[in-house]
Length: 459
Image (cartoon, rainbow, N blue to C red; front, side):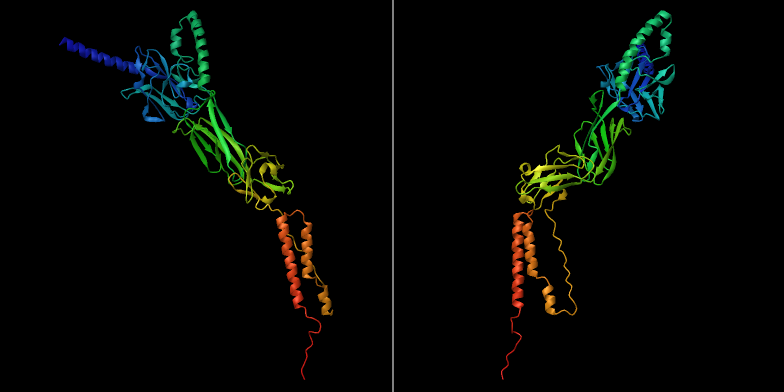
């Protein structure tokens, strides 16, 4: 019987000690901004070690079940009177840190530490707007939560425990020296955990209607690329793009109308975050691609001249000069200055005078930017012949120009035009000559011979 009583007493004392130990774990410091670097400092005020992995942290990201705490350094226990840090990204620290998927809002949130039995600790921390931003943390100092420079894993800047331990001037000076060293280490850690996120966006600020514009973006912190979270692009035209942070490949977006568009590039630390940790804004001007074929060479020295008719330089990489039989692709990094021209030799492009038929300039997406016309249709001049009312009919007819003569004159003019390609020139001469002969033959047939208006009558 005594053995049983001793066993029961031992079990009761064990649970009482465990319950007492649970009550000694408390939140001592919180850094919640920036969101991607959130951490909580927890202090074991008891005289025995406590398994911290049995606790849960409740915030707006996990209000019911809470965030679990993952052990660090192979141990689940927090030693007596030890400060430990539970962080969203433990790699941002140069000492052992526990891990938890924290989701604290920067305003209007409550952070609670819940023990294994489901009871809340005495420290229920309310996060109000602006209570600890710009690199500061929220710290429990003399029973009140105030904003101060972060001291992760160490005693807060001013606390009642420091006052109790410093009983005389000598110990105070010694402690001050120790605190100075601690402050130096703390400052180094604070810089590392609250450093700003650097944004890098690669894109041209001038785009062209219907032509894809290349984008590339990423964000870094302390010189290292983000390893978790997501990027969100808003292109300002109703379209958007969302990718994981590990996807930093170049991509394209096409604007279909001219104008100025505001592009926003944001970083979110996780899929559930509704507020970005970093954001960057740029403006893109979209204009019509006014590139034309302004001039071509002749058979002896064929070339194609391209003109940029805008007030901005134009990258025509990947554009095409195309005819009915062949095409030439403009190489990358080919840029025409604002209101400038460039000449592409036939020796480079492989195009000749025979490619004038159907010659056109195409965008990289085979959209027609310009169609070249080698000549314009001649405008016929009008000749007015005035005939007197009582003039003989023969006089009026003599004053009318001969259609055959007009056609021959047109043929002579065609011979003078040396700018036409010889196939077009030959066909034009043959057509005009045939037409002149046909008109002459018809008139010859209709013209009556002398004496044909007399009729012989038999008597």
